[in-house]
Image 1 (cartoon, rainbow, N blue to C red):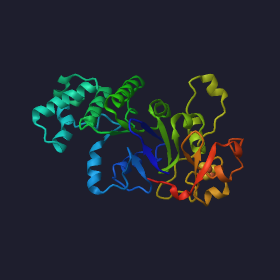
Image 2 (image 1 turned 180 degrees about the horizontal axis):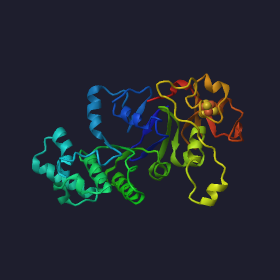
Image 3 (image 1 turned 90 degrees about the vertical axis):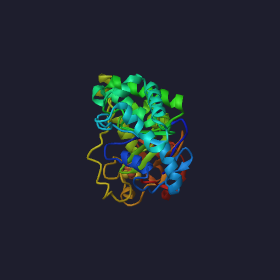
Image 4 (image 1 turned 60 degrees about the vertical axis):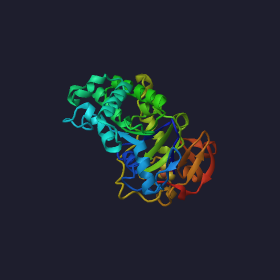
Length: 316
Ligand code: SF4
């Protein structure tokens, strides 16, 4: 299954810890190989020549989870933000300083903060500094790897609003990796659901959250607590048991078969087919082609429109 990020859009990547979300980010940076296609703004990063990839690499920057460790404590904020400019451009010291002040302003911080050290700032401010550093080279894509997970809820909301406003002002596109489904739903245009390094389902955000086609997506969504405690108690939910298996020794057939509540014999033998879903996107599951029921609904009611061959699968 391929993933594709369109200009000015946010692609959310979800899955449990150990599902391969961060591995996908490393595949995008070509730090590791990928078996499938990763198309970012029309360019297949898995297929670019080394020379083209080097220029592409500058267009893709990352924001990490931990704002405490992603900034060098011995450098001033200005020095940290200016570092990529020193490496990738021939800007004068004065021009670098101007650019640093410009990006600090873009992330809502004062110019004089450039002369202070990271330990003088709160977690939210440090994440703003990390974002300033990530946008200083005017990238086209930001990979946000659990970028708001270490922040409290109100700071999370402020940083999410900042990311949304930067997307509009700078025309950025985001690959937004998070285990937090509510955050992903809020910020994404489309979503890919990962399990054991494979994309199990992908599609437009509303279709994924309102009518998930894949059993793994369904169980993941059911695990999200209801805001209303009464509803939470009265709603019967399936629970995903066990841990994600060792990725170096995945189950044969469908990689989710050892934990799937709908697993059939064929699931433990043959890789699942990738099937297009009404409403957009694709799902990788035998139930779409050979199962009797899904979640109590007759198979005919499943939103399946067309099959694509299993070999189109991707496991970054
Ligand atoms: Fe479950 Fe089988 Fe579908 Fe895999 S292919 S998700 S095991 S029903």
